[in-house]
Image (cartoon, rainbow, N blue to C red; front, side, top):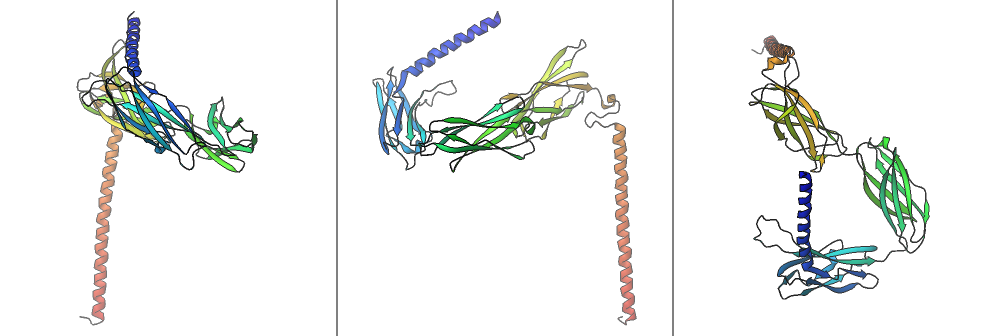
Length: 418
């Protein structure tokens, strides 16, 4: 019943919000919503549209242009001020087209945006954004192909599809597509379609297949090179196979009770691209006598980034000063890109009274205490050998030097150099 009440409240809030928003939208409007300019008919064009103040509200609006053709649009004003006696205000614009207009439809968008006051502080506010679109139609040449690149995932393969459409003035007698994609060994695979003809206004699907065995989980850039009657066009799109995955591959087995324990959490990136903003949400639960769980702590690791197919170690500290001896479960969920969450993974961890309780095993190195002591003794022995070697080299050098001096002195005496 409580669930039904929550759903009901949600819909009531949604309806109220929609009513408020609709009142805001209908208070201002644009007439007309678009302008179309044919580049065959105009090199320059002067136009206008009206911003309508339906509810006679006072408001400040700023005006600017965006879009691929924005550089060729000039406005007569960059602001509008409505008083309560204004029912509509006109915005005029001029269009100066470049010498070469892109074939087909290009667009510039004139934005009319409400300016919010500086005194709204930290309150939630919304602003009205209206758009007038200017469509510029460029003439198609004799030979022109529009290409869309898509992928169809099949059971064992990916079908790569180039949808080609002849928008030119003449028929195309010979068209084919070559696809280039890197496989899992970073070897460039080349896939070529058959040659076709393409009548005016006709479209066709040029396809090729690549086996999933040649790929791995990740993103692959696919280049489609379309060749038609001596011309070349290239289209690039990413093929995505599988989903990004980061695995928690290691976490501590033991912590010492009543201490600030360092921990090591190792992450493995199984994706073929670098993944950023990776962090782990950890919930700590104590295992009770009846085998149930009691949540005792939770924390989040520092964010990091992991290169493709690489491991990254996150280090931190876990406080057991207020924790009892016993078994715990660390439940971990890896988050990344602010949109992905991996499945929960649990690690069983023991909190022990002292290191000897491990039966001679160090909780942080995983080596036996006897092995550690043996390694220390071996290290000491090696140090002694190094010291003796150094002493031997120094003594040997002194002896050689003394011998050379005596030899030179003897020769001097024999030659009468005294």
